[in-house]
Image (cartoon, rainbow, N blue to C red; front, side):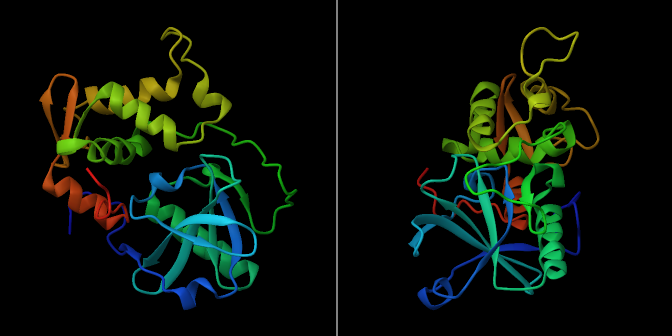
Length: 236
């Protein structure tokens, strides 16, 4: 088991859903401010009475099952969590487990079952979404998506920008740090603070192949796999 894993009791796996499972009645339980590619690159397509959608199915500890979907008409950086019909209490528990397993704060939720929802209107994300601690996984995911599993700081920031929905706070600069949005500065800190005991470099998940380049190690890939981020179907 990789060292420094966020929850040693949780193992997140991407699972394949067959047509029978896709035809089951499913209910949306939450809407997350992340693109599907933030969670995995093992993505499939399906259709239902609403529209065509992309999806990935997950299992936590071989017991908690849910799927993430992005419909063609959805905003680009939005993903909905679906499960079989269940009580609101059960749904809240699964959403909480999913967020913890993916390393997401619940502030990354646009909506969770039990809250009022108006179709076509999402409540804005509030508070700072991307902090240095939460950005470490995002940096690893981004770098692993490039050829050779290595990427420059600029490439990493651009990838993260394409998959993360930011709050107004994320887009504001730090008062003393010029005009660059704070989320970009925080991502830069993940890469520059290499000597920290909790950095992706100290944990052995990545190494610097140049001053401005990050390469994900085999241990880093193993860690990403443990939190559900699968590259198996990615054409790199």
